[in-house]
Amino acid sequence: MRVGLLTGGGDCPGLNAVIRAAGRRVMTRDGEVVGVLEGWKGLVDGLFEPLGPREISGLLPRGGTIIGTTRTNPFKLDGGVDKVLANVRDAGLDALVAIGGEDTLGVAARLYEEHEFPVVGVPKTIDNDLSATDYTFGFDTAVTIATEAIDRLHTTAESHNRVMVLEVMGRHTGWIAVMSGIAGGADVILIPEQPISIEEACDDIRRRHERGKDFSIVVVSEGFELEGAGDGGDVDQFGHVRLSERGVGAALAREIEQRTGYETRVTVLGHVQRGGSPTARDRVLATRYGLKTADLVEERKFGRMAALQGDSIVDVPLKDATAELKTVPEDWFAVARAFFG
Ligand code: F6P
Image 1 (cartoon, rainbow, N blue to C red):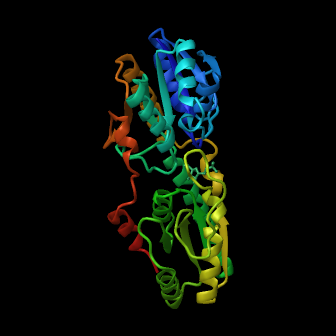
Image 2 (image 1 turned 90 degrees about the horizontal axis):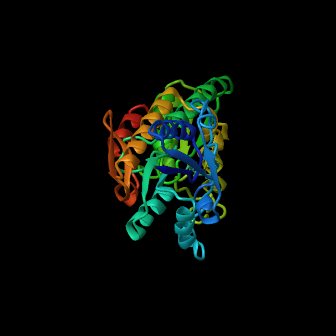
Image 3 (image 1 turned 60 degrees about the horizontal axis):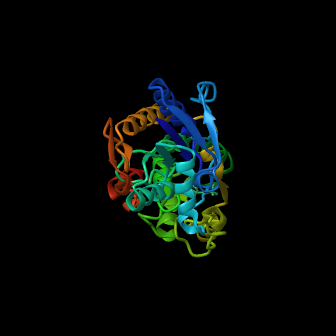
């Protein structure tokens, strides 16, 4: 079989580990592997690169994606879908492995439903907001990076008796904020789906300071709704605004300082959360996903996605993964909240 591999949307650590694992298994079965360059743009414009044993070797620890990525949506481009179908036919691809999050897999699911497109999916995103899988790869690395940042902020916060606000990514969900906040011992965490008011957050900080602590760590997710924050930057082809430009961390820091009188600083972690080498856990997960998708391709189980349920790798319908966002449930937030104030 001739199998295309595509990475779409925001990059994350572990993409190359999937390429390695899926590529290796396809090659072991005498199949050919083709890299589709720059996400769905590569299928619209016909950008392909053959991948052999040499190209997929040494990829396990390497961050980013060797085949590039964009946030291109073929359904938003004039004739985009027809070009995708024609390029797949001309390139002689028997199957496509789409490695992506909500947007990339949403396109894959639609192509499968509307055009019987031979595609299987792999769930990727640092945001961990895809349904039908317990975890996406990339998330563990982002949480590890954010946790290290919280650890580092602790020592400088303590030295200066300051409140330190850390803004993390996560778009519409607060998975990174909650998990890194629990792991790093944050004193307050603000996320879009379990919002607490600024006054409650300030009360928690005041209570802590009354108990004799002179510093506090506050973690806020970039998508947290806050008066005083902006609307965000440009909208991409999937309708997402650039949340990092809302300045929610800075607005929150201003509010905290004004209301409590405690000196406050802000750190915006940004794309550092998506860069560099994947954690061991993400490498293992990405590897298992890669092998599973090669099996799905071999079995011609198209329209499916590899998923983690409990400790097992299973396959689920692509449309189940993208039907709705997986948000942070109350019980996870309760774990974090037990340590507020
Ligand atoms: O979806 C992953 C993500 O990192 C979000 O957490 C964030 O809002 C967005 O991508 C940033 O996108 P870009 O890389 O286009 O700035």
